[in-house]
Image 1: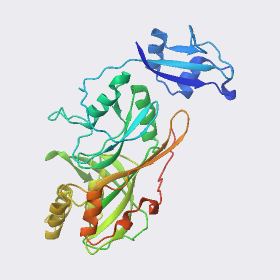
Image 2: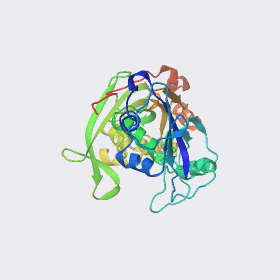
Image 3: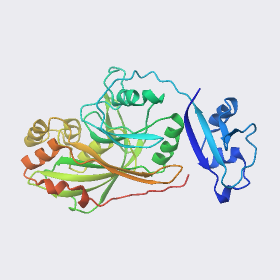
Image 4: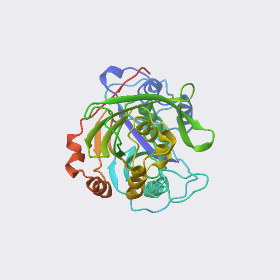
Amino acid sequence: MHIFTLEFTVPDNLDGGTVEHILRSHLKMSQRMIRTLKQTDGVLRNGVLVDRLYRRVTHGDVLTVLLPEETSDIAPESMNLEVCYEDSGVVMVNKPPGVLTHPTARERRGSLLAGVRAYLEPDGLVPHCIHRLDRDTSGLLLFAKHAYVHHLYDRLVRRHALHREYLALCYAPDTRGTDGTWQTIQSSIAGDESKPSRRVLVETGGQTAVTHYRVLARTARAAVVQLSLETGRTHQIRIHLASVGLPLIGDTDYTYQLYGNAPRDAATYAHMANGQQLHAFRLSFSTPIEQHPVCVESPLRPEMLELWEMLGGHQTDCNLVNCEFFCGNATVEE
């Protein structure tokens, strides 16, 4: 059964090419997917079944690809989702803090993935996580509506072309770093052998992690920090911020891990925060096939703004319009 359809109009520069060449080189389909389409009669040209994928096309032809139906072992759970963006291939949701992105071995219910599963169920579609956020991190999260679309966006992630920006409230016991100037942290992150759920910085081995950040505003002991990621390692922001003396408020794990006995007011700030103070406020990319630019923003959640004011700051310090975009190394070789 076919549920998900994709249409592609042949441009001038592909006139005379084969259907299979377009599927592989321009629609970025795997050989496995192409074999499936052959077996399921999944490609039409101008509404007529393509019996052989070596058939040639003409400028203006419309190829319709009928992708196979998918199944999922994630049970759908109805949720009140805040959908911030949606097109034929993806849906973007504003994740509240305290909600898992996807189920774990111990917690099978209550994940945002299950909520998106229920949202897409009437259309027979199955969601796939394109990237992830920690349980206590809020903000923009992108889901693909089909494994093929997930494959396309995974290519964007690997090419550093899915731009993820965050705002964080940090404990700032000193004034290291230059306010307003972009800084870069590059290190290797590995699992903590003594506690598998946690990560550590290592000299050799591990996974390379790159974070760009700048301090937007400071009070006596706290700071608002903007971050842009090149990589998306587990706990990357949390461990990187702590490593440069700007531990995330509410994240006692890495504050204590990197500082040893953290100053007393760090624990006080963590208690005031009621969870780590990190928000994914901007997500931008160009759609993989049409190359349409997409840029979505989610304002800082009210409780973070209230905490910042309690710490002596002003809400205007967190205005998104004042946040210059840092693209980092936006393109790399395939």
